[in-house]
Image (cartoon, rainbow, N blue to C red; front, side, top):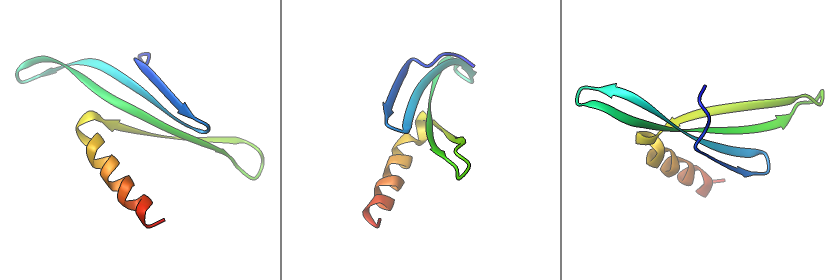
Amino acid sequence: MSQPTNNFKDKNVSAAVFEKQAEGRNGTFTSKSIALQTGYKNKDGDWINRTLTIVSNDLDKVINVLTQAKEVM
């Protein structure tokens, strides 16, 4: 996997931004995504990591849905 262009972290939550060149109908373009990772220790004390990859076209939708979910928590 390629190296991230940027990294952000707040305690046990991190985000890494990735870019890669891709071929499309209209030629080469830069595809961007975010790998969102959170971790926690299970009852045995082992670290469990979960990663969700979000492509740039979905980022605003993800922020919108998470904002709505936060409002009811």
